[in-house]
Image: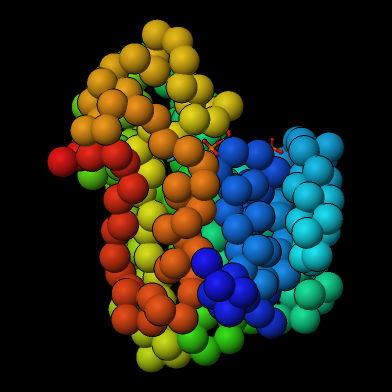
Length: 251
Ligand code: NDP
């Protein structure tokens, strides 16, 4: 990759929710490598968030970490405001924070279902509204949905899959409202990616790996690469799209 390609987000500012670990941390590092200043949010992992900020700074990039539970609307709004106040503008929002509570649907409690909805859907609505207040024309809103938002191959993920289906149609609907500002809205749908949420080893991993065409889990960098492409200038005509990066799981 030439130096020019690496800096395709030079001068841009990105907010990545849930950027302290896993897919979000890889996205933050990749957007920073492409030249963006990045604000990451987290809920509990202050040390992990600090290490992402330090890793970005050590390669000459600029990043800040902001504590904001995605289920707390006021905290999410304040985080977006702080990112804009500190980094000066907003060009890219990556709605990555998300969680799953795997179990049989009939055993899921109301509290568990509320938690999954509050983080995966309500948190996305709130962060997106807050970001749109500041987003420059030509901005990018990118969701991290899931391949299970389109096709579900295993039991145990009913409320989670429903939230990711909601994220998918939210993306499509919002694309229609903000297109006049040149803002694109897209939904990156990972398949099984090796993170703390979905480790590539153990009983739960075996059927997920077998369901891919490539017979392996994906790496966080493979999702970050798609997000970086969608965030960049070459993706200017892609909007309202669901971009599945799942090793062929849904093929
Ligand atoms: P991880 O659990 O590994 O990391 C989650 C990240 O989000 C952490 O930085 C965590 O920070 C943060 N986070 C969690 N809850 C909250 C919250 N309430 N408020 C703010 N931040 C929060 O998850 P992944 O990286 O695996 O998943 C990231 C996204 O990708 C999610 O939306 C998930 O649904 C989606 N996805 C993942 C797949 C996979 O196989 N891994 C497949 C398909 C989609 P902290 O520690 O501080 O809470």
